Length: 242
Image 1 (cartoon, rainbow, N blue to C red):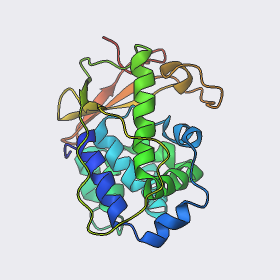
Image 2: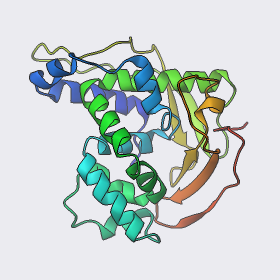
Image 3: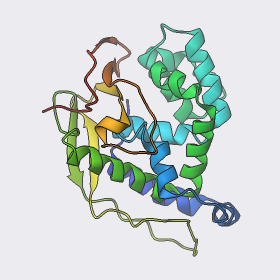
């Protein structure tokens, strides 16, 4: 699994914004997603390890490929890890989508939410900085609540974001919030193992009246080598315990 920390993702976001056609960015200004809407969209994934978060955000910008990959994972329930990725090498999907078959639970879960996939993909294309700022807001909430800490599964750290690359042409990107001076980075404690969290945002982040989610918190482990790790017991609404 390629290592992709949030510092690099911030740089990717800046490059993506510069690469988008000006007319696409302008159209997004007609009805941008509010911070509240963005927080609703990112609440389910803000505490994902950064490498997985990067893959997932990029994959949602290809909703048709995402749906096809989710259907493939449903049809191949035993396919996981690198072995699954090799099985879809000839599929005409974007690489960001194909790489997600290593995490069938993620694909199947969000594949069942096509509106969410399309909305967050649209938001990431039109307002990439705001999407990442939303992730940081939620991580700060989880950290303040004592629910985001380094442990044997993840390493949580604070880092300065990468500076945006210089722009040759002037491009206006829809942005509603200023970027944080530092970003909270979530990495696997072991590079070869990625834990995929499932959690209740109303517990992890604190009580939010606009979030309605009743899923329990738990960890599922996946080895980058393609091996199948054991499921971990459910944790009561907590992402990381010291």
